[in-house]
Length: 275
Image 1 (cartoon, rainbow, N blue to C red):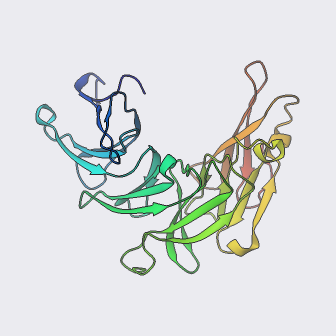
Image 2: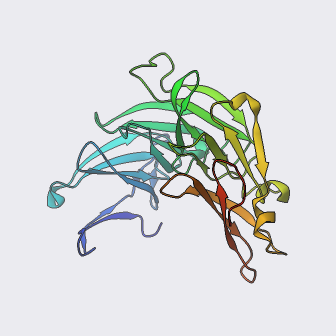
């Protein structure tokens, strides 16, 4: 986060080639901000560009690196405070949280423009988000939240589902707030939702899992921390990640500095402990 700048480096050597300050005006009040931090950085699939979130100013930069000595930068005003985000299933649209504004900004990386600003409460925190095909609304992207139990589903197909595109089509109710990551896989029918920052230990030490083909059924709770058998400690369960095959989900179990932590591996199909 410090200093307030982004750096373009050589891919082979990681030598700094260009350092650019992020200081500038905020999108809403047009006030000068001396220390805007860089949040998410992703590589465009459409152009030789990096997409750079500037947190406090609420601006998304499309930094074209074809000519590093004469950078071409497209500035897209979005909302404050930009944080993390991920691609839709086509890798054209970048969806990113402006969490303190309770917005999801959608960037069309092909046309280099803001496609939409979508309401999502409370303090959305998607990580990269999760893409899957909704039984009714087609392709959707999901985010959970820090401030409430909402899992917000946004339709992402402007071609075949134009009437629903860039709208919240469903809001699921998870275990509670304090969620950091949602995850699924193209080969899976499961949507996993963590809640490591929830004040209730029963929630922070477990995960919720939805069947994406039967969302009305609600979620199943899996006691990941209990499966780790660590004994004393906070045992916050965080960030489900799939293996390459898509048949295992790995969870981190975070304990205190002086306590043992763990990785727990769950069979995605059976939702049972593997190791």
